[in-house]
Image (cartoon, rainbow, N blue to C red; front, side, top):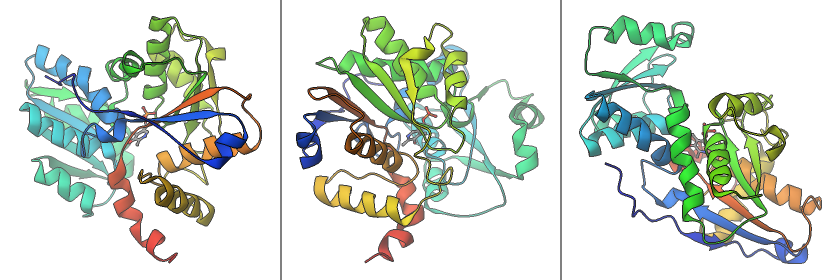
Length: 300
Ligand SMILES: *Cc1c(COP(=O)(O)O)cnc(C)c1O
């Protein structure tokens, strides 16, 4: 189903700070895989949709907040590969660019109050127990099938890196990176930047998806959440503006802004050794910035 010849180049990040510290820093441009099935969502959905197809299910049911990149990715992938899609959206009825795009791709939305939303399986059963075509996809594409797809990043790399960084929401991408690096027998250190406060839970989330994961192989930097999920500060938006204006690479405040900020901050604090090389996974999700454009414009 998912073609394997998509475009995700590796680019050098040429900043004086990295030169000063003797580091080579590259970005894996998974944001370029697809505009709407973006980044890690493409990788996560690959084996999830394959499993749905293998089970002869043609109706994808999933969950997310109103700005969820996963909802839009599932809507678009469903359209592309011939599935009907329905999503439970957390919270009161709203309209925004992300949900409008999801509807354009044919997704049906069911707004669900926050308490009811918590028990996803109960919701699924209440609406779709009788639907023999329905296939449950967890929020954010969380799960072992999702992780497996993310592990394939390592198959595409032409060199070995000392450090690989990604942003973490559920930890599925990080678990997948661990699978990939282990399969390749690499000593690369994996780093996660949790975008939620209290990000230590990611360690356990990774172990649940990949029990063979050696915990010392993963380093979580839990101080770059800027107040919590989807929270931002003027310092973060300034950083994002500066980075985008210098590189032509778009990052956003929910995930990748925090990720790149973290790598720059660790670099300036001499966290890395001279001569090391670092790969940052750009996990995409750029429509998120549409919900925050006012904060960026006000700065000018
Ligand atoms: C969904 C998302 C993540 C979170 O990935 P997990 O596998 O849930 O940790 C990271 N970055 C972007 C851009 C995302 O859209």
